[in-house]
Image 1 (tube, rainbow, N blue to C red):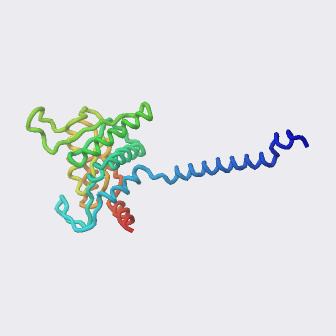
Image 2: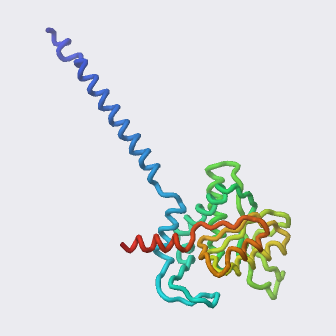
Image 3: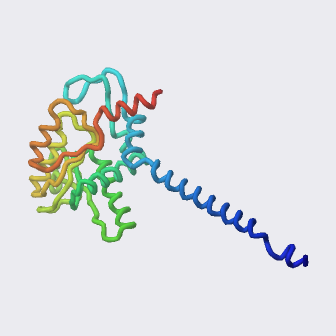
Amino acid sequence: MSAGSAYGRMPEFVHRGAQADRELVFAGSLNTLQSTEMTTPTHAQQLLSLLARLSFRLGQFKLSSGGTSDYYVDCRTTTLHAEGGRLTGHAILELLEEKGIEAEAVGGLTLGADPIVSNVATASAWRAQSKPGAPLLHGFLVRKAEKAHGTGRRIEGFNSPGARVVIVDDVCTTGASTINAIEAAREAQMIVAAVVCIVEREEANGRPAVEAAAEGAPFLCLFTANDVRREHIRQQH
């Protein structure tokens, strides 16, 4: 046997073994990628986890509505959190996409809506960067009372008669602050396309009151208070 035949050519079974190894590695990488894609939590799921950790407390609390509760949700500790704000913006934007809600702007009553409005508007700008042509959602804030100086206007930011807008709020109990924002948007001759809250408490007649004020526009929530409670309890164990 010549040196060339002994060393210059790799036996066929070795070639087959190497090819099988490469195929196995590729299949393993593909499975890992698919598994990662399947298990990566959505923006809403990540937001729920953060809300349960940062914003939810069990105990005895007096609510702004005058009632009492065995839990308290302060969404602002999450919506003003750097990562929580980012997740809020993307989660609400994705909810609007899922429901087919088209609008030019998003707004709500100060103070609870402020970080939500800013983060949804910013999320829409990031979306437009990755998806050219995707619509931007601008922001506006509703004052609790008209300014006593300057223009005396109640709405700051986007304000265009005839525009379709989404009203946002952090927690809906009685729905009073949400309804206040709905009425202000309508007074400015804007069309309420939808109403979104982060957490719905499902009490104090809040949903029926908001739906009546929305006059047919859908009232959506990312989570119920029970969703956040369950996640909070799960994290404690």
